[in-house]
Length: 322
Length: 234
Image (cartoon, rainbow over the protein chains, first blue to last red):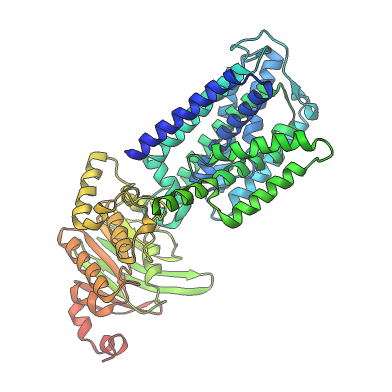
């Protein structure tokens, strides 16, 4: 199909650019920016599975993110366990938490899911804040270990982190692209648009919402693990914060919910905006980046609720007419 | 095939269906007719468990189905084409149809049914890659019916397929139902367009304020005084 071919071409170009650009521009800050951008694009795509495609908005994805970071970091700090195993443990625990939230809540109609994700995230943050083994509110610092893939630690430069995140971005995008074209993808979107009609067709809607949430939770946890290992310090106030939950939603909403390219486009705008507004406005302008974000979201809501993807579509449509 | 015994449904405290009973035999074309708010849609919703009855039983092939969840009812072979042409706007025509085949496993078989649907509704084939939202009212209705048939149902339930269509189109849709029945699918239709439907069906039930007040062969009902006065204005 023409559409599939277009996707593969554009996707390859982006991947090659992301892989080559940091080799050409050997600026550490630029590399950091790319890492954060790809990480948040992957993370938001994971959110997009449940929030965008299946239409069940979660305001508590930090819970999966935090579980992922702690699962990788705590065993590494205490026992020196390779973070790759920790990452998988985090993914599995996130799936279990997704079941705990989803099984009762997806039986209900309406906004209960959004509210409960919010509540669960707050509860889990409190739990970690009071948990001695993970040093409560102080959080965990990554131990200094031999660098390399086994420990997922690199001190000399950021490039290995960038390529690892790029691989996960690649997997996440490809998975979403394939999912869009399977029956499960159709069911997700059918449930989002007309749950009752989907139900009348015999679609087991709570089961499919649960699948979406489990997939989303798993990949969110993986991203959490990568984040912790890259930043080298985690604490409840960052990895389990409402900030993270909201940022994931904002990026996807800005780029376009339920759209394949939405999360990447959202990150391309939001991540640099956030980084630079913080650098330029510094401590004196604390919070100004958030005001800018807020303004952007208001504009998007008023003029193009489909996000940047919608803007591009509109532009394409007009070009087609001329 | 389908036996509904004394079902009653309330929305909060308001009674919508009151001891409704009716029968659909295999291979029949059965209609429930009645004015707006008589409870026609509620009957179909109750059958597919989107609404629950507080009293009464529903049997399908001699098996109680009134306690089953919607997805199991669909799996038993009851397909519901909802009122107002509730197609999935953001999905393409083909994707809409494939969602309809949700209860079936054999993908090869599903693709064959897809071709059958394209033969029955050629416009859908022409537009298969377009989004649902680009269709006109009549085309949407055709898609909704085709989507319902994709499940290869034993019983197809249609909720006011003629609603909002021009007289010519609505006649066409109702006659398409007749064609589907000839191919062997049992149909239960609820309609406001009393004359057109009653001319075609084997059996009709007249629903008024949640109660079945009359039943009989389609032609018989058309000739009855009640129908002539209340619905045809004669």
